[in-house]
Image 1: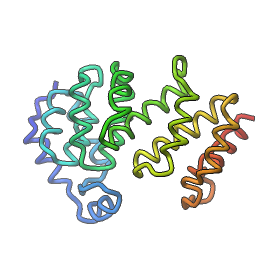
Image 2: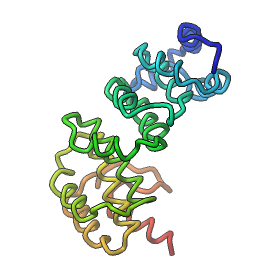
Image 3: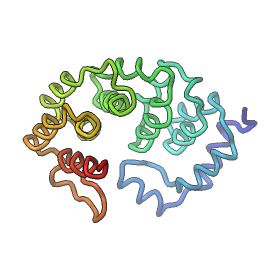
Length: 221
């Protein structure tokens, strides 16, 4: 456990504030001005400390919450802990890190997925779809892929942006990982045209599900 207090950690974060970094981050929905490489270096120096992470999360400081994710041990956070953290995220990066670094690695991942799947909050549903994608790829046993595709077909077009992005990833991974469902996944994607016009840099894979599926299947050989 670290000897650093939340007050100490937040003071160190404040010292890393960079107006240029803040301007860039705020354009992407992240209200902080800390270079992430420097934040990771601070996390390494602090060490793993879930109690300190809880305090940092409660501070409502975006960079503090990001540091909190980096120093948390997922197994030490309950369903209630992770749910509370998710509902108090104030940045896109904090949401992304919380889902990928904590929720997906939590022993309670499936309980969280089920709890959030029909939540009234779109960001919670987005987290559930991200957890669903992880299961589609790594542990599909027990998932009703037909039912998932039914719901995607009904809801993808009009879903809020963060939920839409996560749901679209599930659609693509069903098509990539499960050949039996590939034709239907392609048909849904081509008909709904979600993210079809998303600007994609050269040599990067488009997030448009049919293009994504086709490219990843091509790479599989």
